[in-house]
Image 1 (tube, rainbow, N blue to C red):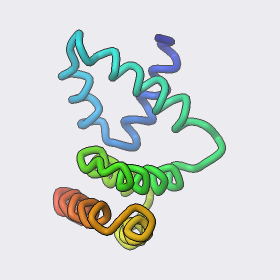
Image 2 (cartoon, helix red, strand yellow):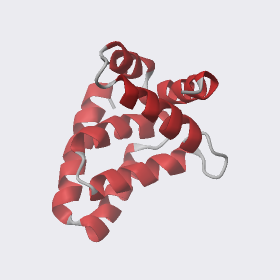
Image 3 (cartoon, one colour):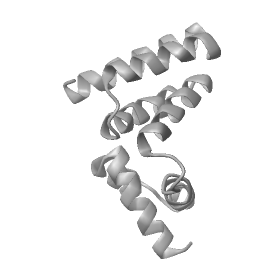
Amino acid sequence: MNKDSFEKGLKTRREVLGAEYVDNSLKNADDFNMPMQELVTDYCWNEIWNRPGLDRKTRSIINLSMLTALNRPHELKLHVRGAINNGLSKTEISEVLLQTAIYCGVPAAIDSFRGAKEVFKEMGI
């Protein structure tokens, strides 16, 4: 693992997902899953999220769409919070999820709306 790359990824990961969530994930990691935490932080949050080709708001839109398509509600809720942190409004998130209803299926979009509402409530939005 490249320490500099990890630290850059950790900074981005904290900015998008929130320091409390990220720090808890790392604190609760053990010998079994710490390699996954390191991989995600370095590869995903530095090598991909820090690329110059797309802004964070656009990356959040893409993630919400893909996570709905893959029906990954836990990760979707995490990335709804990230989308808010990256500047998306509730209206924009709703529009993304409506778009996914057509291309990914209504049941997947309904689950994503449900998860998003839970996050909005938690965040007081």
